[in-house]
Image 1 (cartoon, helix red, strand yellow):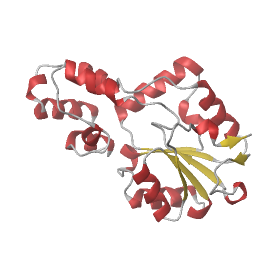
Image 2: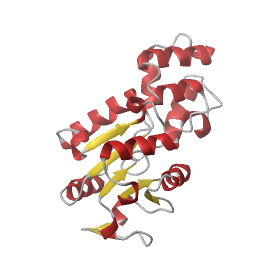
Image 3: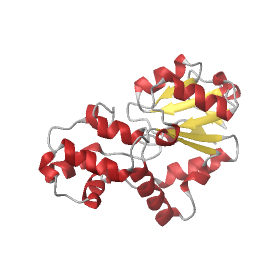
Length: 215
C-alpha cells in the first residue's frame, strides 16, 4: 500500500481511521434542508444541522436522546411541524444520505487486507439505520464489517472535534497516535486530531479518498 499524501510516509502508518460523511459516503445537506422546508421548517443551515449548534441535532449525535425524542424535540423547536409524525421527520432528516460509491467500497476492502481500518464518525441512530440498510441492499453483507471497529459519536457520547474523542479512540485502538492516519473532510476535525498527535489528511479541493492510495 502506497499512501499518496505528501506529508505522510506509508511506513509511518500502522492503522487508518476514516470519517464517513463526505469521505466514504457523499452527503448532500441541501436535500435535508429542502425536505425540512417542504414541512415548513425554515432557517436551518450547516451550523445548526452539521456543526450541532442547535440542541436537538447535537443531542442526537451525542446519543443523549432517542430518535423518538429527537422527533419530539424537532416538533417542540419548530411549532409549524407539531402535527408531523416521527416517520416523516426522520425521512426528511435522512434525505441528505447518498448511495455508497462502488470504488470507495472496493478501496476499503482492499485496504483492509493490508492494514487495520477503522471508522470515526459523527453520526446518529436514524442515519446509521439508513446507511446500513442502503449498503446491505446494494452490496450485501454488513457495512460495519469493512472495519476492525466503527466508532460512532452517539455510542461514544463524544463528537469531533472534541479532543477527548481522539484520545478515547486511540486508547481503544491501542496504536500510538502518531501511527494513526485520520482522513476527514472537516478542517476543524483534522486540526483537532493533529493536536492529539495523530497524522491527519484534510480531504478537500475535489480530491476523493480513492485518490489517496495506490494499491
